Length: 479
Image (cartoon, rainbow, N blue to C red; front, side, top):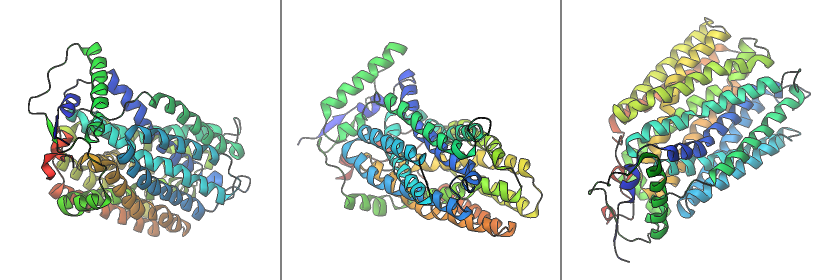
């Protein structure tokens, strides 16, 4: 095949922000809303699930259910991530949402821990696949100049789902509405209803033209970019010409999907420093978040004697801090730069966790002040964690973007996320504040070290086209 020069990436990056971009963000960003809904439902109703008239779970089983959900997400990310690079972004972000829908609907009918755990695994499969497919599509459709803030805001929408999950659990387990025995089941069923609605909206999101052109589907890529431009022009008028220097050369229009050997060579040889940074960011944020959030309800009920029906109230300030962090700090990741902002948010989040953990151990906090402290800490931690997903999605070549996201997500969640809920579940069961503080200290050290690594080695990807940050494997750069 002859070489191909394409200006499609430049045409996407030069588009002004439009209603079309908003539709893409809403349709795809719901993945994080659903994840937040799932995690918060389990976190908020953890004490309810311990009741003998529900599932009669132990604190350890609740911790295990969180870890099993993460295990499903890890497997889903790897399987669906590979398929996303092979078959395209759109096919997979429809399939993964369908898997999630079936898993969360089945959860509502759980008769015991074994079935509940299986359903959590299936739900995790869908969510893990979503991370790979959605992050790939978003980065490839959003203009470079705002890619950082948009990606952070979308990842931060997890906490909109968290607030929604808290609100749903608060209402449904109220004896005046449905009550704890059936209310938790209704909550999972409502999550499935939301997913079905989003499945219908998502059908109108196009395939990534960047992916199409790199896989030889030139005519289809041109048709889609022309349709996008027509929609944006209808709102903003004639578009400026793309920069003359914005052409990307592809060595062969029909480049095949990257083999796993090629993926390994890029990660371990060509971009070794980027891989180390990505791994550190993902492992540390996974431990940080899952350690605290999956067992949040247990801390409130065991150490602060918060009634199980009021646990959800304490989710709202926590969620608010997590939503505001990426929204307010996100623009700085495009203006100040990736390295400085990643390092700042990671290090300050770690310091905040250590201080809050110390105050918890000393008994200086009550349930309300504990929630306010977490809100402040996670204002920073949410932006930090979102920047980890941004990093792994933009610093590797297009043909392996989804599997790279999947690999780092899987390793990060496997090492940091899977162990954290089980560890903290056991630490909480001891009834010792000192034991729980050990877990907090581990989380603080991990994120501080990751932040310092990012400051030294992270890529300066702000406001740069994806093809400049990491040239496609099909481009002449890799010859």
